[in-house]
Length: 155
Image (tube, rainbow, N blue to C red; front, side, top):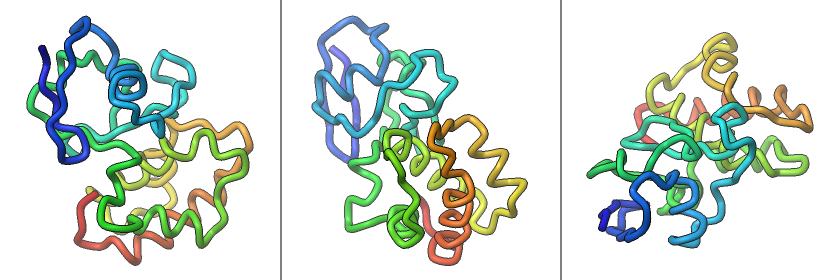
C-alpha cells in the first residue's frame, strides 16, 4: 500500500506501484481535473504540483511520490480561487478548456518561484504546455495579471 498526501488529505493506493500518478488521481481518487493528453509528458495537460514543483503526472510513477504533497487543480484554490484561476477568468483565457488545468498548474508553479516573470520567463516555463486552440497570448496576459496578485505567496 502506498500512502499519498493529495490536496492536503492522506489517501491510500493499493495497486501497482509503477502506475502513473495520473491514473491514480483520475481513476482511484476521482480527481478528474488533471487531464490525459499525450501520455509521454509532452503536452502538459496532466501537470500537477509535487511539493510545489510542476511535474507531469503521466510520467510520475505513484511509488516515486513518497511523502511529497501532491496538489491537483482541485486543490490549488482550496480556500477560494487561486490568483491564477481568477486571472484566467478575468482574461477569458479558455477556449475549449481541455489544456487549462495543466496550464494553470504550470503558471502557478512559475509564479511561486518567480513572482514577477517577464515574457521570456513565462514562455520558458509554459513551453511544455500545448494549447491546440492557440490561447497563448491570453495565457501570457493572465499570468502577468496574476503576478500582481501572487507576489510573496506560494501555490
